[in-house]
Structures are given as C-alpha cells and as structure tokens.
Amino acid sequence: MAAGPRPICRPRIGREPAIAANASNARARDDVASIHADLGIALAATNDFAGAHQALAKAVSLADEVSKQAPTNARFRARLAVRYSELSRVHLQSAQAGSTDAKTEWQRARDYLAKSSAIWEELRQKKILMPADATKPDQVAQDLATCDAALSRQL
Image 1: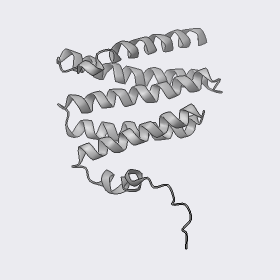
Image 2 (image 1 turned 180 degrees about the vertical axis):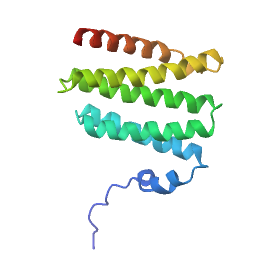
Image 3 (image 1 turned 135 degrees about the vertical axis):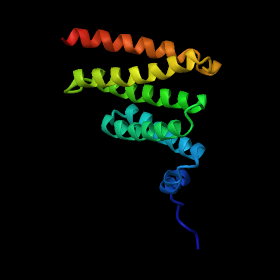
Image 4 (image 1 turned 120 degrees about the horizontal axis):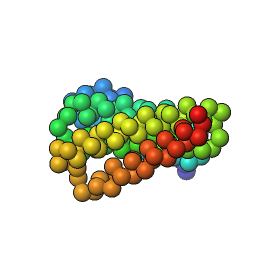
C-alpha cells in the first residue's frame, strides 16, 4: 500500500521549546534566532508585516539572550546587531508600503537601527569587528540617514 505524501518537517522549529529552555546552549539558541529571522524576512517579502515583526522580534529577543550569556563573544554581538538591523528593515518596508502609521514605523526603524549602530561601534572600538561585517556599520548609517530624512519630512 502506497503511503501519501510525507508532511513537511521542520525539525529545528519543532524542537524550539526544548532548545529555548536550555539557556546553556548558546549556539543552538543562536540557530533558532536565525530561523526566526529567516521566517520574518520571508514574511516581509510577502507583505505580511505583522507576522514579520513578530518573527523578527523573537529573533532579536533570542539573540539578545545569547549575547548576554557571552558578552565578549564578537560573533554573538554581531548577530544581535544584524537582528536589530533586520527588524528595522521590516519597519522601513512597512513605512514605505504605505502603513497607516508610517511615522511610527519610521521611528521604530530608526530606534532599532540606533541599537544596531551602537553594537557595531562597540565592536569597532574594541577592534573585534570581523572582516565579513566590515561594511555593515556603514549600511546601518545609511539606513539611519534614510529614516532621519523621512522623519523630518513628516514633521
């Protein structure tokens, strides 16, 4: 007897509660944060900004927890900066797509970019900014300028 199609399995998402409950497993928690970030980016691409905000907020929360567990780990700090930047981009997209509260979206984007920028600056000053991330602080600075310009037009 032929079996029907197998359901799509998402093993990491299915194990998320167990991984999330294990505070000592920073690498696994970082992986789960990356999965939530990827999900948020995919939802934003379909203009599901509410779902994207939720997924990326979870990614930021997990990345923040991991970063606090290992505050001297440059990789985890950089990952947190990236997560803030990704969340800001969703707010930027929402504002540019004609959100009913565009000014709030621009301001939230700016707030998250400022957090990202602060982490990048910290890494740069400590001279532990990884070469792969060398251009990311400049991109965040450009996005901050975009937000500032949009917010000044809305005043």
